[in-house]
Image (cartoon, rainbow, N blue to C red):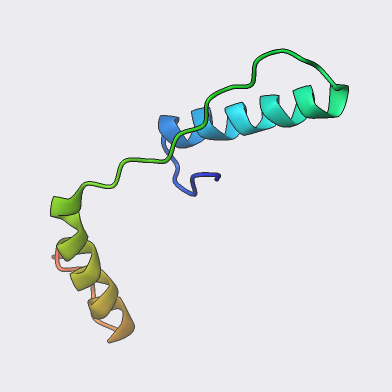
Length: 66
């Protein structure tokens, strides 16, 4: 599963998926790259939910003080 996040982890995941697709297309019997899911820190999930709620209500991000 691709990672929709602009990080090095996301870039690496996308590259692994692309390499695997190329190997499949070429019919190669080479080992496939391991693709892992992005770690989601449970401690941040409450803050993410709070941010989504504020966004839906048309409120600024809680850290947007400008």
